[in-house]
Image 1 (tube, rainbow, N blue to C red):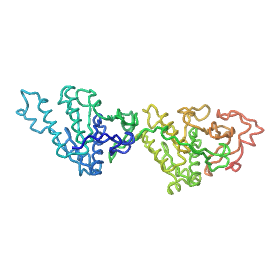
Image 2 (image 1 turned 180 degrees about the horizontal axis):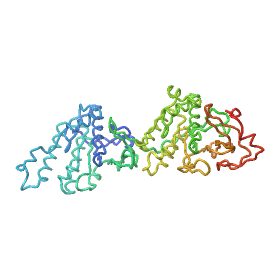
Image 3 (image 1 turned 180 degrees about the vertical axis):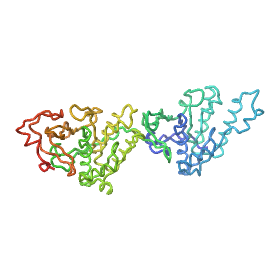
Image 4 (image 1 turned 90 degrees about the horizontal axis):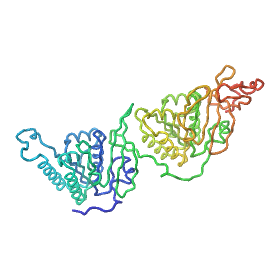
Length: 503
């Protein structure tokens, strides 16, 4: 047999999308790996993907099962649309004669006989097929047969020495159903991956994978979301914005509206995040769509993630405002993803954002912040997730726009999160009452990229489009929603018609 490979740069792909990135490149060849998790977390699926990847590369692969039958394993593969050709399955399962009382042991304990027999059958199967990749499912059976930790550890150590001396890359599965929950195998394995399943108060359960240890490899620590879909496991590596720092010149992107550009200091700078905040119905989503429309007019790509409004409603509403988002989508300049709140995990949104940036997106809209927070109510650090996404977008020179709905219509309003933590720029839309009408106002509260107007202007969204009007001079207390004003000036400011707006 070939000697054990000692080159830690020789990686084998796990066959699981996203997992190799978490592992820092893949699985070091000729080592022993432990995949642990409760029943239902996807261990068998992961193991089959590992073997299918090996078979695809022309390697001999072997699945040794101590619990599931070959029929059950092929059924799992069939449900994912996989071809099991090239994968040898070795069943080491007690036969039905074990139910016969005459076949049960009386003098010797079953473990004393069955442990040796099971080990011999494992070794014989490996010697016969000489595989490059091996899966042993599951360790719980061996642990129960060994009875005590000392014997169990010695058995696993012996298997490790045997397998690695045969140039086998081995994945051991542990479903944690044995009576003892000791950590014997964790100390023996070259790397340990833990699959976790957490129930949510509403919606789909949350799945995470953690790399507990990986000797000699700089893996990505922490919890990473994953899904089990048709086609197997898909891992969404946790985004670390610090790993993607780049420096580049930043230009201003116009909104396509001269009056709005004048208000915000010329446009929105690349790499800056902007929060468009205001009560429901003030035109926040329409204003965000205006920036997307302007990007499409320049031939630049955009992406929108909708948590509240349906995609079809957005396209129809924007068409009425003269914003041709449907045409931009048809031409490939715009991608609109309607998010299903009950099924979302933070890692999925992160992965979708990263893929959008890789496609060359220059403007990205999240509509809305409240929908994002409500989509995952059981998640404790959503604001931190979002901050990491926005930092990543900023480092990639993307203009990110977040729509935030404030609580309250007239008067004091509050936001769901600390705006300063997530936004470089803040555009505020407000209602105010004047002459028996509910009107709208727009102002820029904060802008890090450049100087901006400190004024409050009229704002209107109608069938004629989005309009930014004159400065509301002579008013006091517009931000309270119930302003006071000088009657001599009201006819020159608040009472202007739509034709007087600057577009």
